[in-house]
Length: 268
Length: 186
Image (cartoon, rainbow over all chains, first blue to last red; front, side):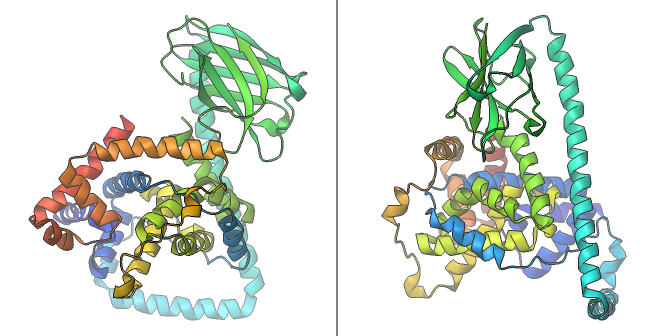
């Protein structure tokens, strides 16, 4: 890729994100983005800023009936076949559009034939590949998250200002064994065993309360096995000596302020 | 905390599940982002019924084409909002001239009891922070950006409307986006 072309396209990224380019330029930028990680990253940042702008729209709530309508429409639809992304493609292909057309035609004929021959086999394979891809992505994310969590947990446990808080179980969590390790500079580690399954449609969320102000530290993970763990950086610059750590049940994704029942709590 | 990386990771897992054909996952995606999508569609279209149609189209498209979501081009919520904006602006452009500027803000929607108070609280807090960041932009930058984003005007159209050179409009939009992103992540 020439740097001249790169520079020219980098200038067009805002217009690309805003859908302001004509079809030809749109396609050219799209092709370049597959070859250029720097431009893809820049576009990602532009899209992030636009998503923020979208949130400045007045927060008018949709009617409750819309959810059922959306789900009903999805229930009647089939998913499209996975689009094949070619990343870092050979730029020569842009010089041979007829070759791409011929290849696409051959592919269509081949696809039509194979569809005719073995529709069910193709569907099963496609679903297997989708599942395997989703699983691999999921595992990669978990591995990265665990690695980061282990580093942070070690930093908390070895911090000079770390203090332990036993967390007492309440309600149906009376038999739960739980403990928090709190370092105002490094963060919070919460571990829990024999944790009851949260009520349907709820998750456990951890709060750090200083001077009467609860701040979310995040969600308690892995509740399905009766164990829960959270490792998080300090949710807010503290400074006070008294701190309470509490766990409540909240809707999926958690809230900015606690609303559910307190299951575990401890103070120092 | 919950917004940011953790939310992005949750959304990525959800979209993988949607791509794997799990209909439960599209319901979760709606619960997480349906209100945002609706608010954007409502802002562009100016009325509830059209915004509802757009929301339905957005989640149908997300269900059909979850495989085409490209994580390297932005977060899942950004992808949903791109679809919503495109669909809403298509509707605006398809309107007859007599319907342009139609505004039938549905008073019932404004006092809707559909969302839990806590959810509303989060949405409101997040929206307030964003609105504050947008309001801090210089007025000429904000105007250019809003005309481009919410009204779908081209940079040439914005230049004509604001009586500013094309290059200036381009710079204003670029600078506004960079400032917005920086101020929100500061």
